[in-house]
Length: 247
Ligand code: 13P
Figure 1 (cartoon, rainbow, N blue to C red):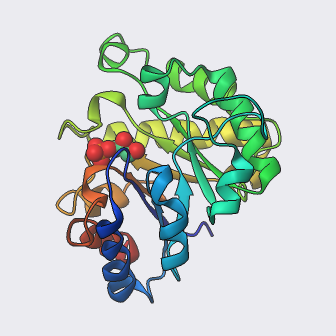
Figure 2 (figure 1 turned 90 degrees about the vertical axis):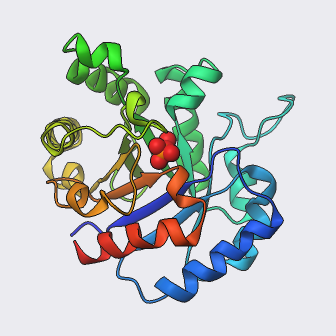
């Protein structure tokens, strides 16, 4: 059985007062039967980790090297030192804003595994790629290129985030989500074997809200969500966690 995961990506949002959201989430969902993860911006990470009791805390990126002359970067080991258990890697905003390639993401994932972090590796097509009927080819290439051979269901989560659904209010149909999630599952089983392939949790991300969460969680091979905007407040994130727990 794959344990369900409700993950929040705060992106470049959040200041110290927003840590109150963690207290509110823990009060509401302390006994939830699902894992809850929040990935705040780096400056909040250690304070959030000190405050959180049941909620896991993660980074939004890490460098492939353990240390050295890399101004502005954070190593996987530093995330662990700050209290993180997870790290998001290969988010489309990193791929677009920072030119991250599949090779970069794979190197970062290796570093994350070595540091003992769970890597949440993101894949997803652009609108143009979907309209050109290239979605599955794009996903296939990203999975092959971004995931190290040492990945398994314990050290990795895969998030399907169609670029065109992120922050837009647009959501793929449940058929479209199901098609991609089934495809990702089959690719993982083919590469890592059935047992490992079946143990990897697959998250959907892109405009998930309380109002659409239940129908998304009913789709096969959807084991949770990676949520941006609707994870910023306990009020908005809470119904998503409740829907996942009920699914
Ligand atoms: P939104 O939920 O704001 O669309 O963002 C999704 C996302 O990018 C999570 O990583």
